[in-house]
Image (cartoon, rainbow, N blue to C red):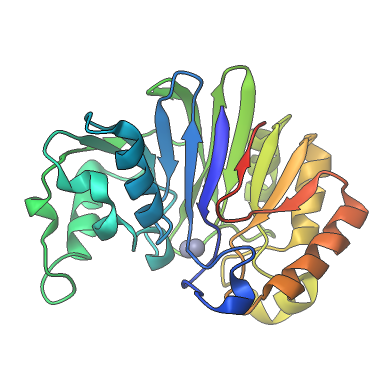
Length: 272
Ligand SMILES: [Zn+2]
Ligand SMILES: [Zn+2]
């Protein structure tokens, strides 16, 4: 399988020249399996580019997608109204979360109601389905084996352990370290991962003033990666105030501690 980053920024898009090396769009990842099947993580503003690319690659054929949602803060849903595959009746998009289906439908409809958006969610042409995953239980989503697990984040968020083609990718954003039980859980589900995408919004120095905001640091990411035997640690959910130059320094510090550390970069594809 392949993992492509369409959005790596946390909180709000940052389309400023000094940020575009690592990228300005908010969270959206694409997992492409050997068969060509696609599973998406989150619908931040990066979803717009992904949607256009999916239609281009489909070349007129219908598109079937599985979308795993971590939670519903703006930086994870604002690309959904601009996700082109949703506008064609030939397509089918299935949203997976650990929340009740009806609640998720209401949340996604809610951001497109009057006066926030001109087209209502109900008028989108694609078949939309909502499926509830049981937390900490493994289930097949399309061809991908998916296990959601709880993260420490205001109003809750889900991490995902994803397995296919003999490889493991773990996504753990948005998450704040410090809750002993959830710190144990994240290590358990990240165990032996080929790739761990981790919430490194703050530096350890910045974190002291940001306790309770629901985000972690590169140093915690390194600790999790070491203790869980992770091969590649991908630092993501970049803070809006962190420029490319700043993130390059963060990466150098992280790589000095953990050689397999890298920065999530918009447009980049990784193979586990
Ligand atoms: Zn976020
Ligand atoms: Zn969040």
